[in-house]
Length: 128
Image 1 (cartoon, rainbow, N blue to C red):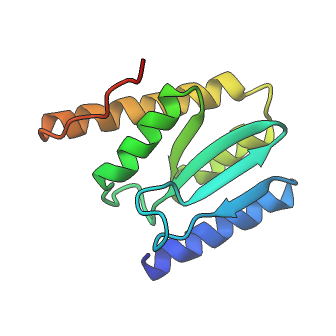
Image 2: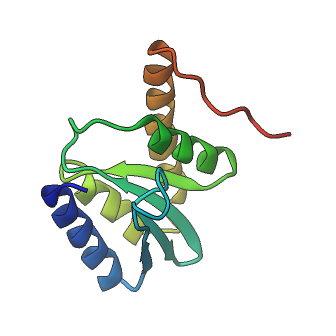
C-alpha cells in the first residue's frame, strides 16, 4: 500500500472509531483483493476500499469483491479524500441514511462493472 493511501486509511479509521464504529483493517498481504476496512456500526456492515485519490486505479479483484458484497445485500464503497466527508456523514446518520448509502455504493459498483466489462473483464457469476 502506498504511503499516502496509508494516511487516508488511518484518517478514515480514526473518524469511524470516533463515532463508536468497530473497524477492522484487512492486511493486504494476507487477503489480496479484500476491501481495506470492514466496518460495523449500529448493526450495519460496510466494506470500504480506500484509495489515495479519486483518480487512483482500481484493481479488478477489488471491484469484484465489492460486486459480490453488493449482490449479497451488503454495502461496499470506494472511499478517497474527495468523497470521504460525504460518506462519513451518511455512515454517521445510519439507519436514516442507509438507503442513500446503499444507492451510492450501487452506483459506484455499477460504474465499475461497466468500466471493467468495456475492458473485457468478466464479473463473477451470481450464485443461485
